[in-house]
Image (tube, rainbow, N blue to C red; front, side, top):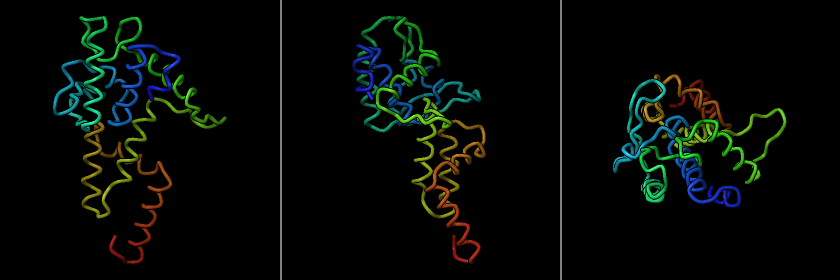
Length: 194
């Protein structure tokens, strides 16, 4: 992702956006949650998301590689002004990032890497990274009913959804998931164990 910003953004700005987008992709955070992160929210156990969309807090574990990359970014960020602002991600104006900043930078990166944009099709957005994370998590779900239920509930909690029903719409998002659902329904109707 950093390569997408190489000629466009320099220094901390390039590191900020490449780290932010990588974090969104590997955690499924909402953009507002990620840009609201402060130094104290990065712990050895993961990221503390405070007062998210539904005014709930949660802990989002990080893979070791994501944790290591974030620690390297934080070392660079702490050496840059504003020194008194606790936010992890700041703009070139030394203020916390805003949604508009993130959207603009994402579109710049999408154009730079040649992300296709067909007329009449929705364009990729930073939220697409959350969507992709959720779909990939569901695609790796174990096959038996009890594991599926536990997996969906865990994913719902991880994503910060107020209700598990808000996670179900990801089930219809890809041909692979729809094929799995159709196969299960067919097995159920023919009397096979689902």
